[in-house]
Image (cartoon, rainbow, N blue to C red; front, side):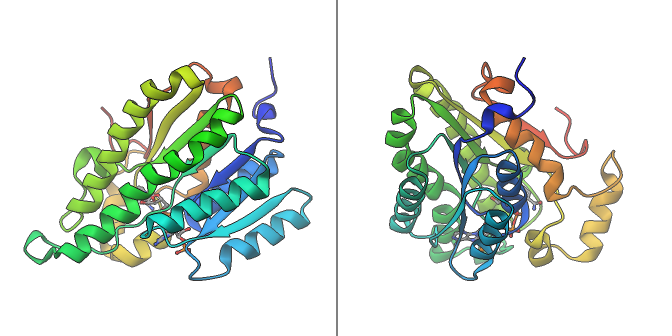
Length: 257
Ligand SMILES: NC(=O)c1ccc[n+]([C@@H]2O[C@H](COP(=O)([O-])OP(=O)(O)OC[C@H]3O[C@@H](n4cnc5c(N)ncnc54)[C@H](OP(=O)(O)O)[C@@H]3O)[C@@H](O)[C@H]2O)c1
């Protein structure tokens, strides 16, 4: 029996949206297990570069790539940069995304619709397509997509397009899992519940968050670190080599179905 996570040592991993929040926790965990990691941020701050520097100082090989994922060409460039820096790719974690705004139906303009779809949906398709030759060249690998509890519940008012974009990624995950199984590429997703990151500092009031926490069976909001185990598990062939096309819910019991 391989030690837990031992097979991730030396793996080449791109985690998109890893300048902060869930992605930063996931990228840090991969690096701590000896994986070679490319972190990614939109380019709006140097947070991914700073985290890469700190992790490299800890003795692991970590790079930072940038790209505003509302632009499909920037997604392709970020994947290319990661593949080049790492010398290939074994694991792709598609995590970059955000709600963009809480907008009720009558105020949803075409530009808003495009932005939410480009960032949360199109970027995942484009990243998978661009990474595929490298994953095939590696002889197989793993794709782990970040979806959301709102993909199944519909989320709360004003989040319809974001929630639907995550539902698209859930279904895309299952379909791609069947398509890429012959290539020995497993495709799964992690579905976080309400996780206390910058995301909710932007889109949820303290009162809304307190009310949500009170309804969660485990009695609190999730943390970015709470999500990490599901990503490592789904990335590790030793731990989940016979699992593909699945969505793991990480939500403290917020949704049980
Ligand atoms: N927090 C939750 O409760 C929750 C629940 C379900 C699902 N999720 C999903 O989990 C993922 C991570 O969320 P989080 O809570 O960790 O949020 P976060 O702290 O706001 O981090 C979002 C990450 O996505 C990147 N990103 C945002 N806009 C981008 C753009 N235009 N181009 C490229 N990258 C961009 C950010 O990069 P910069 O720092 O450069 O902006 C950052 O690394 C997202 O896909 C989110 O939808 C979150």
